[in-house]
Image 1 (tube, rainbow, N blue to C red):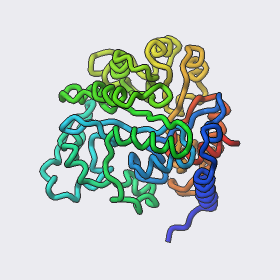
Image 2: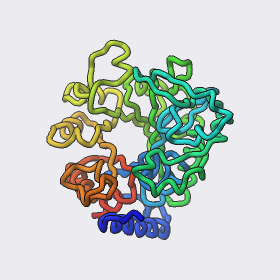
Image 3: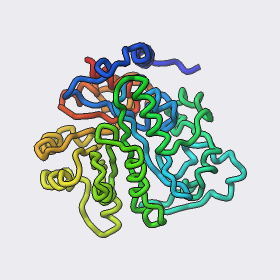
Length: 355
């Protein structure tokens, strides 16, 4: 039997307490909204630390425990419907490999310059994807989540919007959706562009700036959304190495590092309201101050509780998957003055925000 480290036990207990508080708290808008100026808590793929990502259970748990926004990653089906999966390759996030009727769909594709083998959403109709079930993507890291394998179907983006509105009504506060366009250059090349379908959903549901923020690592994708004049904020995600694939594929040498200089941030401010850098990009650098000076808000990613994802000074115990001092890491970044955190454990982020 696996023995939990004492710190892990305390965090698990705190999470359970947080769930009880969220479930029994008053549901009036005044009681549920967080004070102005406090950092937003964004549930990364829902509450991926506690439930298989991008499932109704994951999104619901995130909101129950206090998340302000929930994040769906968008990829298209063969019949051009936007569904939510971490990647278009779905062998790690669904039970597709156990479906003999789809065995011949296994193939190798080059996605953003990298060869990937598996099953891809663009080879399935929505009806076919709906026959699959979601599974935990990191079973060796989060074996506790595998108990939920097979319980949830693949969701469309529209279904996530519907869920967010239902949860907003239940908990008396506006829960925003935070969609990310995944591999937009790749999908445009297949004749399955993401931006028109995303714009269609936003318009159809009359999503305003409090209900939807669109993110992408590819600036041309965000500029295409901007051209749709939807009135929703845009968020430029920033990697740690190389540059956005849309720029790389067009021969533009601009790197993410270039985009985080004062000149680069000023350029981003011309089309976006937010940047989302890797959290490591803010430590010992002027990026946060420079972004604020450019009029941008900053939401670093991705906060997790396991030791392997924490800075060395916050690790506790000897196991890579033992929980470390996640609260200390949140305190560090809240103290820096970030405007949001993107986290797999929104319950812990909310508790840390309460002090």
